[in-house]
Image 1 (cartoon, helix red, strand yellow):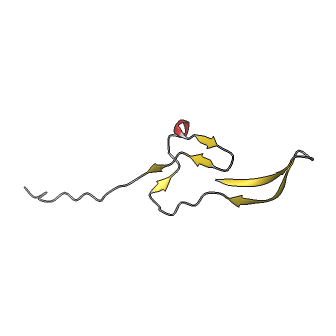
Image 2: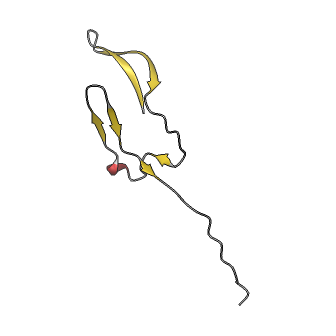
Image 3: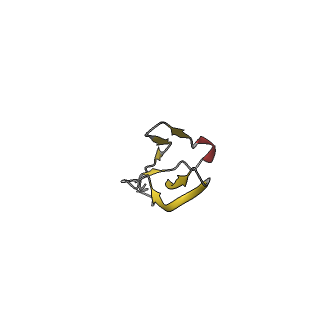
Length: 65
């Protein structure tokens, strides 16, 4: 998620965009089902829906039977 300042007097964006999120784990991501993505705003907080994805490597043994 990125943000940019806003000049209320001019009614226009001001300054350079800056990151407001940091996913420290590759298993966290924005959900692939976009309708499930929600934002919540409070005075000093932004909440973004994320999902935790995990996977595994599956091995099939004994295929010669």
